[in-house]
Image (cartoon, rainbow, N blue to C red):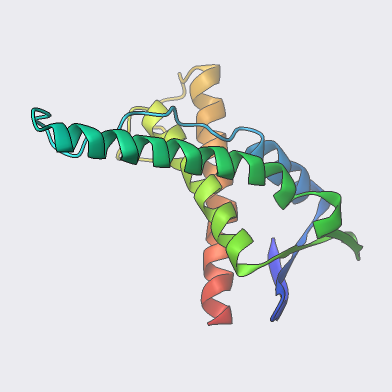
Amino acid sequence: MKLVKTSPAGSSYFLNPTELQLLDSVLQKFPFTPDLPAEITLETRDPQDIERAKLLNESLAEHRRELARSTRALVAADRLQPWKKGHLLTLSSTDREILLQILNDIRVGCWHSLGQPDELEPKTPDMSEQEFAWRNLMHLSGYFEHHLIEDGKAEA
């Protein structure tokens, strides 16, 4: 994934066929993390705190639903143009931010599922197929995040 051009309409990234396929498969995993209730305080005796927590959780759930709706649109055919030996993916700054949020949810979710390891590379070869899949998904999400963030710095 490489930034090719920027314009007021957004940024265009070149993806080779493998990257496009991998990005699409990563996005299909969203949402990766479950909806966990957020708590405003540890003690929920105050009715106002309970109401605030309820509103916060409703807002977070709606935000995740919006992100899920956006997921498929991010790599829809109208955003992709054949270019050289791959495709150009054009994203507005808002779409880029949405994509970063989705990728981060998947990457951090995989990390949590792996038990929040300090080392991202396993020291032992006896990992399960599920752990292997989570590690690969975590690294793929990080790969795309890295390119979006680094290329975003270059635009600024």
